[in-house]
Image (cartoon, rainbow, N blue to C red; front, side, top):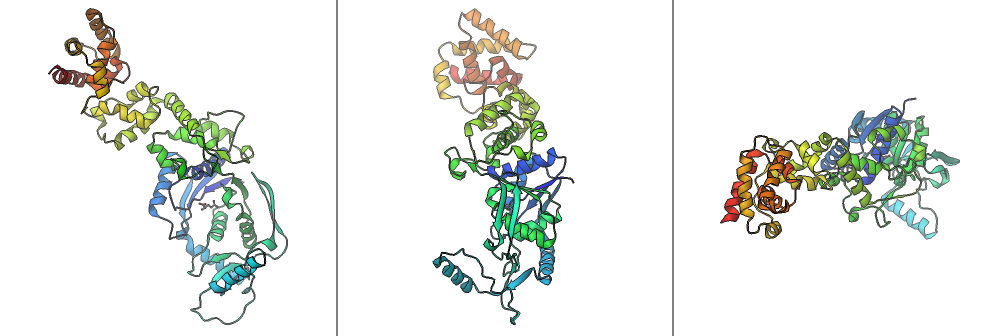
Length: 467
Ligand code: GLU
C-alpha cells in the first residue's frame, strides 16, 4: 500500500519550530517511502483561525521546500461531507443528539469532582426519546463503546491501551452545527487515505477516541506516531520566551532553510552520531523506528553552527538566492547597481554568520554610502592617508583590468614606495570605498564595489578627509 502522510496545522498562529518538525517528519517519511504528502488546514475553529496564519504556514512550508502532493485542503470547505457522515452515524445509532443544558453538564461535573470520580458525560441523552422542539439547542455526541479496550501500537510510544469505560461520549457537532476537531480529523484522514498519522504527542490522548470513530465508520485505522515535545535551552517547554520560535523569524534572522531543516531533523531523530544531513540524505535515512522517545532540547548554538556550515558549503548560487531576499528586505531593489550576489556570498561566507549580517555588510555594494564609520576613521585616517588615497586614485584610474589581483598588486607598489605597511594603504581605502574598515581583501572589495564606483568613492573621500 502506498504510504500517505499529512501535516494538519490549525491556523491560529505562525508556524513554530514544533509544527515545522512535525511537518518535516511527515514529509520525510512520505518521501522515504516514495509516497504522498498532504497539507490540510484545520480551520474549523473560526474564532481563532486567521488568513494571516494560513499565509504564514504556507509561506514557511514553501521556504523550507516541504512541498505537498495534495492540498491544501481546508476543513471549512468540507462541512457538507462531515454533515453527511454525522447523519449516517445518527441513522445507525452510533451518534445521538444531546439536549443537556450547559448547567446540567456543569453540575454533573461538579458532582463527579466532589465524589472524586472521573469527570465525564453520563450518557443521559443516549436513550432519550422524549420530544424536543425544533428550536431547542442540542449537540451531537458519538456513542463510545461501553466495554472493552481501545489499543494501538504507537511507533514512538509503544503499546497504548485505554478502557472504553474511561472515555466520554465525545461531542462531534457543537450546538451551532459545526463539527469538532476529533471528528473532522478522522473523516479527513479516512477520506484522504492517510496511512500514517505523525503528530505531536499533545494529541496522544485523543487517539483512542479517534480510533473508536474510525471503527464506527468502518474505516481503516492508520499507524500513529506521536512525537515527543521540544524543550527550550533551559529545559522548559519551548515557547516564545525562548526567542525566535517561528519559522519565518528564523528566515528574518538570516538562517538558511537547509540549516533549519538539518537542525529540525535532529530534534527527535538520529542516525548514529551524524549531525550534518543534506535533504537527500535525510530522505534516504529517515525511518520511524529511529525517532527518539524522549523530549528533545533546543540548542541555539547548534543551529548557528549548522547555519555557518551551510553558508560555506552550499553552492554560492543557492545561498545567493536567500541573500537576495535579505537585500530586498533592507531596501535593495535593483541588484544591477551592484555585483552579482554570488560574488558577495563567495567573499562573505567565511566572514559572516547569518545572511542578515551578510546583507547588511553588502549594502555598500548596492547603495551609496552615507557615512564613514567613526571608529574606523579615528583609527585609520591619519596624516598621510589622503596622500595614499590620491596615489591609489592615480594608479587605479590607469589600471586596465579590474580584478582583485591586479588591484592588490598596484596597492602593494604604493605601500612599498611609501615605505609603509599594507594596512596603512588598505584601511583608509576600505573606509573610502565601503564606509567601514571591515571588508574582505581590499582587491576583492574594490572588485565588488566596481571600477567606476571605486574611483568616484576615492575622489569623494579625498575631498571629505582632505579638507
Ligand atoms: N490540527 C492539529 C494541531 O494543529 C493537529 C491534528 C493532527 O495532526 O491530527 O495541533
